[in-house]
Amino acid sequence: MESSDYEQVFGWPSASASRFDVVLGDIFAIEWADADMVFCNSTCFTAVMMENIYQNALKCKKGSWFVTMSKRLPNAEKINPGETPREDLHWEFILAIKLQMSWGKATVNLHKKRTHPVAASQ
Image (tube, rainbow, N blue to C red; front, side, top):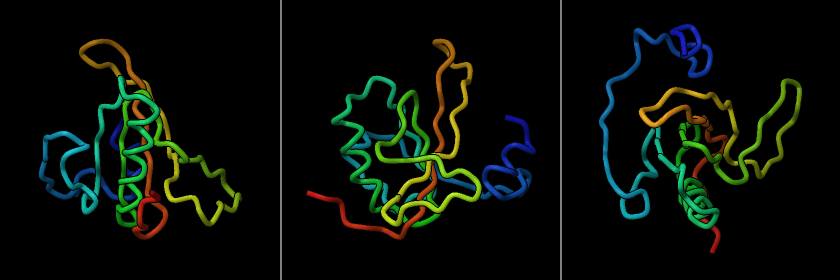
């Protein structure tokens, strides 16, 4: 992505992006609901694992970003211009891009939280 692409997607100038902390760990074992951005290398995850991640992602704050590899968050949908999203749409699918990784090209998926934190369903 070019600098101007970041500015368009994230809504801030890339030169003024905030400092951030990286927390490396098992996404199923650590708390991350307060994160502004979550990256999950989910290429080899099962549908059940992705659903568990989605349930935990419901606790994220409005405006949070979620990046996944190869697989999108379940229940995330693209909102087209002029389209009214469903009230129960918690995560918006923003875009998918193919990027070169050390193992080859992979799809990177970007999602944005549309709602305030909600309790995960049981």
